[in-house]
Amino acid sequence: MKTIEIDEELYQFIAGQTKHIGEDASSILRRLLNINGPLPSQPTETLHSQNHYSIFTNLLTSDAFTTEKSVINRFILLLSTLYNYNPGLFSIAATALHGSKRQYLAKDKQSLELSGKNTKPREIVGTPYWVISNTNTARKVYIIESIMSDMGISENMIGQVISEFSPATK
Image (cartoon, one colour):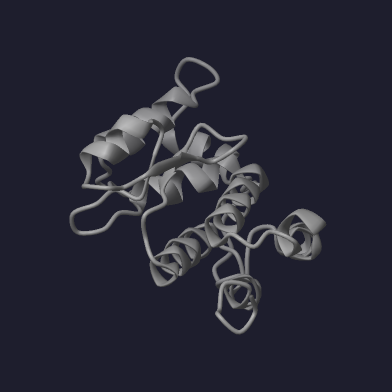
């Protein structure tokens, strides 16, 4: 067994996922991350490689995404899809992501408002999360890349998603 340090919010999240008395953190994380048995010794492309291609390809080709002109609305659609793809991984990635002075995602609007001026928090529909919306597209791309990478989504799929936020695409 190894010991790791995690912040209080992440600890509370993991503890809140306990299914029965005495369940240890490793069991909780294995369940949340959908890992059965020993972890592979070699890196894998992703835990859910078969699933994520169709899920994100469907989003990127959907009418809701392709007809949406607003970058912030497309950003929120993507974050919602990431959450629904794997809420446990999304929660871990969201908790770990922040700037030097700003929190990017939180479970309430007030936390984001306290983390900076003019954050303009927006609710991520279908999730318990809020995201700051007063950032440039490059920062939104950074947030997307960070979350997708932390969730174990393949570099190829991350590249496809990110290309949808480049000026040449829209």
